[in-house]
Image 1: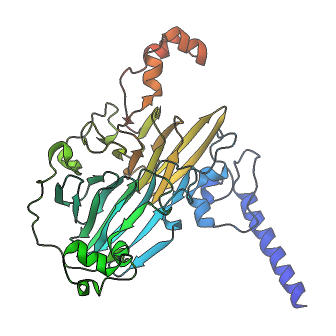
Image 2: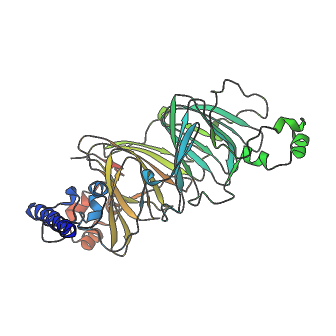
Image 3: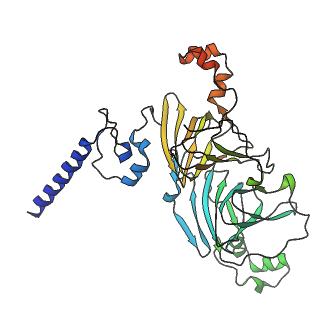
Length: 409
């Protein structure tokens, strides 16, 4: 009897659910259902995460121009495993999370006031962007030159491969985006932590190296702390071969520099690469603010993959990978993505009221893109018109200057 009652309840729920969907008119993508309102699709009857479906209508088939097979190009930091420590936390996105991201791995990292990301270095370059609080960065190069600098919102650091460095939190809560020019960042031999090395070295050797008694190292942690609590540094560094300044500086104070021209009038676009931040030879970046309903114009990048971190707002992008294959993705704060090398794409702000803010990274010494409109405008108009089967007068009016961010309408 209990089984019959349960079965009846399930059948009733199923039929009721189906009836609700059938009665609705028009597309149901925004209600989390793969129904186009024109006779295609049907409700999801099996297990699903409805909140994820609601946030990703493009995955349900909303864009009728999507076609072919395009691998997943999106990863949410919320799906990353968070590692917590006494002074903060970190969560990563590496190639094992997003297999299409060969060039770039990334992390969000949080430090409490005074907390220290242990002294370390990497086999790869490290890039950082501060988006909350203030941090103190300290680094030393192979020539005995050093840099100690305070960074706040929008500021960037770049530590070349093998450069010794550390980061300390200065405000009550401090957070930043980290990126590395190798998608497989977690493999052995990529990161070298100070405590880890010292703990694995015989004390007699340490004493001889530093010229101190062996007992000095009795309290060195057996396992590196990664992030540890501390007190904000007040000491000044002097000596050595002087400070790293000018073209050798590891730090770029983004918002103290003018943004790039945006003829399309749709927002703000900051470019940070080796042309204005000379030390950053393997990671080029942009910091973008796109106004409501604005469009990052159709384009592609000739030098590398494009890796993205979405910081605020909601957006959408269709990625074209050639031979009729295209897929649309929806993005919100905390999402990362990678667009394959030379793939055509755009980014649209889908909000009518809020800005969309994101960061673009490239494993390259410079930011380079080729806009679709500019390409066509600088190609003989009759060839373009014949190819697209459009009137030549339309082609002749195409803008010959990069628009970058097009104002929403």
